[in-house]
Length: 302
Image (cartoon, rainbow, N blue to C red):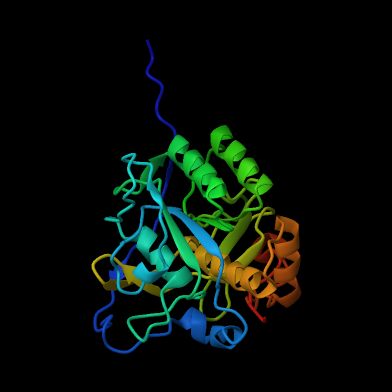
């Protein structure tokens, strides 16, 4: 009798490099994705108040000085308990980009008053069963998350994840997914390829497409994804690159917009809003090519 292999999603390839000298108790650092895009100007109008972002990842450091005041109850689908503690570091990094507090400590996120719902659906090794991810999506929808951020991927379509995404969309959730990091210029990965997803690729500081970023017809937008500094467990900080880092930037920009307008948006509405203010790609290799830039680079001009 053959044994059916469990289907999984995984973290996209990335390398985390510790950042030394960033003390969470001394001053505050603004990452380049905030400085280059003048995010602090958007904060005059909105900081993500009243918006909940579900982060489906390896969990979150529940005691990080830059995150704990913005965390709400989540769940650990890997171990089936109510403690989605992060050991890997990836989920904490994603959460920091979205909503690290503007507290004069460590660093600050794009939407520093948004709430993070940490849902651990990837284990400490970065892999997770598709059913864990599907259940996490449903949990987010049932517990009133406004936005779902997924920095994970697989080359295969999962019907369980697709059905969960359809359910979440019917509940009014916006779903942002990382396009993938293997440099494929024809196809992005799942679940970013699903029609319910808003698929995000990565750019560098020069507004050029990152060499690792997957591109394709399903790509919706680009966002900063190289050398991104954010939170990691035990009150530390790390620099890493990937569409995993671009996706929380996009999710957080959506949180700013939802907070400002004080209402929800459909997938089509948020794509229209982002496209209205998007910056054209400045990469001479791909400028004007939709398969490489989607609708452009997200810029929250609110």
